[in-house]
Image 1: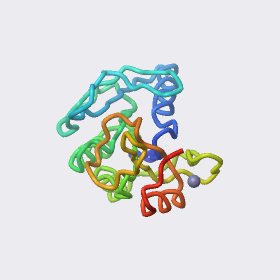
Image 2: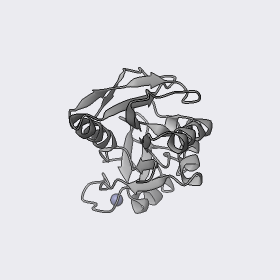
Image 3: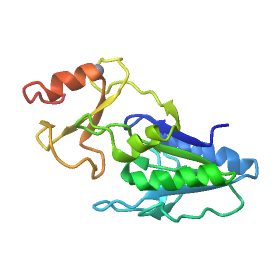
Length: 193
Ligand SMILES: [Zn+2]
């Protein structure tokens, strides 16, 4: 089994739910897991991973993974919102994956709402993490295309085309297909429906 995995998908592609279920199943088999999530600046960092489907799991909130030493009995390390960590944190995970028996599972986003890859996600690709795409459907009404992009909207429903990569919450985002992204991002401030 590969030692370092990256489960990526858009928002609302059930990444956190899969993380929680994965940990739950291992724990049921008597195998110890650790769940980590990033501490991000403008966001309340509750020490839980929460899924929209209504399940949650306890997590350790960390600013950096550099120097992090998992418990010797841990079989799997699961990290949520990996895109908010730094590339150097990915290198720390590589050391854990390659120098201990622990399997490292990362979950997060690949690209931001400006169609730019997150630095930590890029680093995961560079270091050869096994990639697993979690698929979901474009959130535009009636569209059944694969959601691959994020659109960010302001309070008036207009597309935001600049700004920080890091999201404060995600209520102003939609996961959309490439076609809708290109139409709305490069179009004339189309309003979301
Ligand atoms: Zn679409």
